[in-house]
Amino acid sequence: MKAAWLYIVMAGVLLAACGRAPAHHPAPAPSLTPRSTASQPAGIPAIPGGPTGPAHAAPSARPEVGVPVRLVVPSIGVDTGLESLGLLRDGTLQAPHEWGMAGWYADGVRPGDPGPAVIAGHVDSVSGPAVFYRLRDLRPGARATVYTRDGQQLRFVVDDVRSYPKTTFPTAAVYGPTPLPELRLITCTGDFDWTAHSYLDNLVVTARLA
Image (tube, rainbow, N blue to C red; front, side):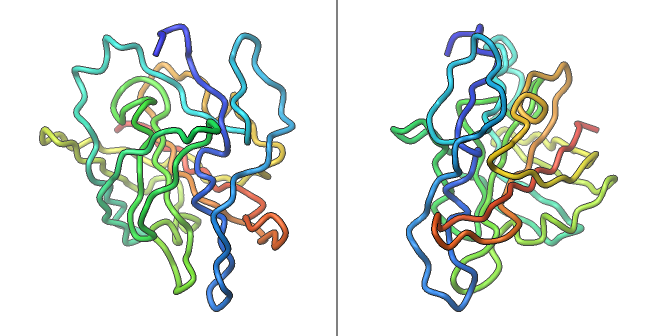
């Protein structure tokens, strides 16, 4: 992609991953986050479907950082492989294929490159908790490590844990360019909308490279 695209606006980064009924109810088909009502940054093309989208690192930074293959967050018991996620035809982010595995946005920033790298996961499934169920329990100071295919270990420290309504998601604040490497761990939270088959809020964990 062109370097001029500092970031793209797309649908709640994950949020086909969160369109399910709580456990013990039949699961509806995954659904996408509603379109954001937040202001659209000038010159950035809006992609239909929702509020968020990760920054893009300059191509020159890419060779220095390997492909992420594993995420470990000890304090909440997360140890997951990472699948590569792309965009669907409607411009929204593909959801991870498995409830118990997270995914990273492979066309965006790689963890360890300048900017916010995105890792998304399901919050739960029809049978119980999914990979990011305890993401809400993270607190500032918690550690997260991303392992790359070439053997690097990228250690991040959590700075912030916040939830945002999907309809007013602060796109620029969460996904705008940053001078240093950051990590965004994202899942769904809040009440479940039975009509839209989706949770109403996004949970966003922000971490910085240690």
